[in-house]
Length: 104
Image 1 (tube, rainbow, N blue to C red):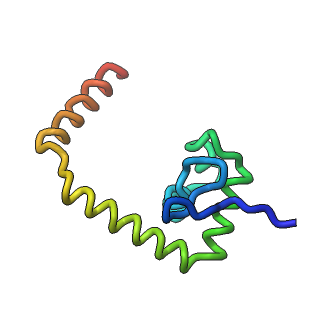
Image 2: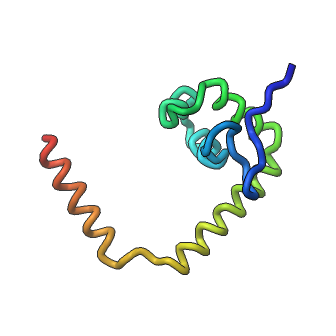
């Protein structure tokens, strides 16, 4: 019996029963994360769903790679038309430093 873990929705791949795009699971997997670590980052997913997503990726690599490239293109186009405020990175860096100094 075969169980489905990934579906095409809104022009992209998502894990069935969740709002998690396959692309984030694939990204973490490519960066050496274990399925258990990926699942801990997404507590709404079961370990079975994560393994199923990875299996789907490995079995449909060409289609998934095309989807990932398209998502990247859309994200880059969005960033070009919606740039972050110039001082945002500096504000975030200062806030991070303040938080870290309080923790030590």
